[in-house]
Amino acid sequence: MNKNILYYFAFLCSGLLLSAPLSAEEYDDYIEGPKWKEATVTIPSFPVRDDVIKIEVDSVDMPFSFYVDPRSLSIGDDGVSRYTIIIESHSGASNVMYEGIRCDTNEYRTYAYGTHDGKFSKALSESWNKISSSGAMAHRYNLKRYYLCSAIDRPFSVSETLQRIRYPEEFSNRGGW
Image (cartoon, rainbow, N blue to C red; front, side):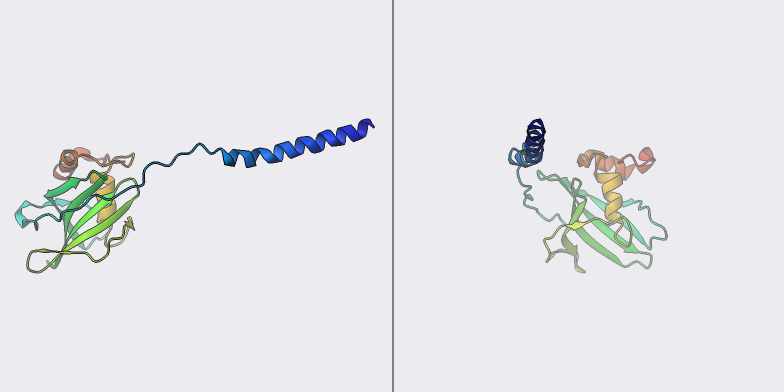
């Protein structure tokens, strides 16, 4: 008789232990914050070549030079750092793009491309893409890491970003991270 009570008690305890994870799922305390919403974006004026600032990009044998238009820099209410970049090959050919970087998600979006007549043309795609640290478009990784975003993935202010672009030697350890 004593043996049966012991088995019954063991069976009851195992049932209680197995039900504990199920009840924890019912009472999940995680509350998701508001869904991110992109701000309305206004494309800036086309960059003036004499006003752009060259930025350094860490990449082996990079065949391009990169320039940022300081007048285009902005941090939106949505937390997106936006800028105009000029990518110039060593032969002199160049591309102009107006882009945004989300520090918190490591993503970028191109809003507009420069045309031959010195104007912007709106990009067809509205998608956000992951930033790569290698390849011809490594400038986005460098912009995020060294110029636009802090180590905790928050955007620097426009004035801090301009300081980092204008005086990179002051941030010789590239203090973003």
